[in-house]
Image (cartoon, rainbow, N blue to C red):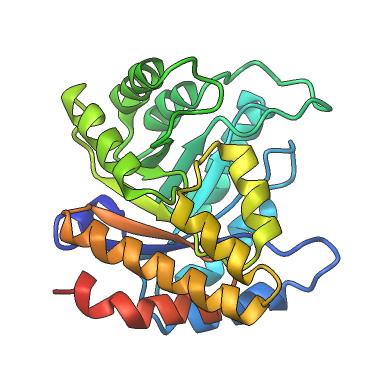
Length: 286
């Protein structure tokens, strides 16, 4: 199924997973997927390494497993370190596996890898994918501004270019202050962006993990969020439960405010995904 059909019917609720490390068995992610399937998400996205040729095979395999489990898959596709020929190969693999949904990304710039320069921006990839087949194309957005943009105004202009190139829906980077998302959504609508926007939510289960993510994506930490981390940073179980509660409160407020969808960054933690799903299922499906 193409994801754009789901947005016509309901508030979308989706998950993100990532392939296991090379030192881990593929069975670890398969066990996670079996548990996530029971939560009946609208789709599950799987990340795809931006490192260069050959890194997409595992993501495609996992996406096929998601599909076998009766859930719609979406595969991330970063482009900055891939040639056109490599992208062609990936798209051919998607078609062979009947994967219809792609999250088109530039990908993080790695100082140790020289970019291939055939796709410098996500919008370049979106345009190319649109010419290669009937895919549903998602794009990323940053409620608190892309780290490489000089201003939110510049970031919104670039987002307009990406959407105009053929993006069907947007998934936001994580954020912890819903007001930032609402301000971004208003700016996007004012600029003429009218595709569905899913809010990306990451539950706090590990203080160091969140601090690394925030450094990467530039999300701000509200004072009430910082107090939670400071209070429970040395009590992993309490921090996990507080993080779940914080994410649930975010989701309740977002759904009440008419969000198009919730994209849960599960970090491959089926326990946390289940706790959140159980808490919000009646709200999302109301």
